[in-house]
Image (cartoon, rainbow, N blue to C red; front, side):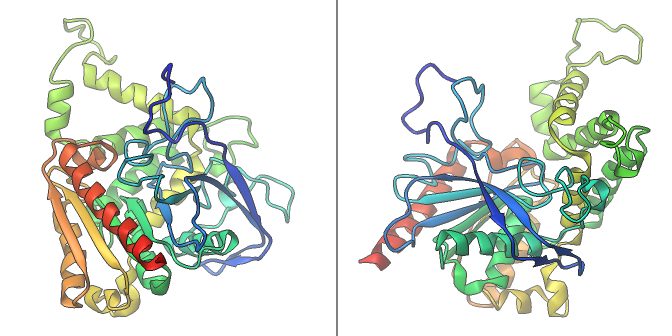
Length: 385
């Protein structure tokens, strides 16, 4: 943590655990009898409860989107560049809600939680989830907070898919939808990447069909390989070339199979770090939710018909070198909205950072984001007068 907390930081934050006793019926037909959601909030909810913004996280994200948990934290929350006083999601004007989704491993009920019906850890028996299940649980959280309508629901990547689902599942409960670096459904290539990642985990001898905690072990090697593969798809060729090139760790070839290039060391480091903090069963669940997402399937596979349900205004942002969720995928959503005569703004931002660009404070991206969110705040404050 810096010696002095920056003026544009939300500062020290404390997560809150919300418990829900009402059973939640999932898309799969299974039922969660009860569950917890780990949540962080920033800013102040106004008297009319109309200035709330929901943050939806991506595959490996969680509730800690901004600020610091303690003075010993080395880094702030995962989207600190966008959330805080004077930032695009301005906590001087908005009350911001960020949660760890169901199935997560950062405090919300998931595979590492105890199944109340058996008294044992869920492990692989935790039900497979769909994006609509997350949105249903988020709507219940909004009810608990007394929020009838979000000023905006915001998310990137898998988070953007949740925003899209919000706009058609609860169209009257959000005024604005901000969908960043996302898609209306996964391509076959993306589904293939996810399956290779899951197989890397499943084939780890320490996976034990998902019952690794009962064996007092972790499938670190498999999870590390899955993360390395995923990380490759989040970066662009330009970004990797600029960051690493063909630089050697020791300045010479050693003619061995140990990591010799800087890029190899970087991937090993990222994989190792991830394998110590993230749950393997959660990774399996999250990638499946990605694979299953296809809201147009309920509307004769017609995205135009699907998006006709939306009532809110939209901002969509894509990035030129994002080949995992290319600009063409965002434009599918934009075109469906335009055909429905919806209010939509769209920007394709020049970036060399690939899919990870949505997490970075790229000046043009931040300027667009900031301008739109000022519009959201003005909209809310105008409606409150």
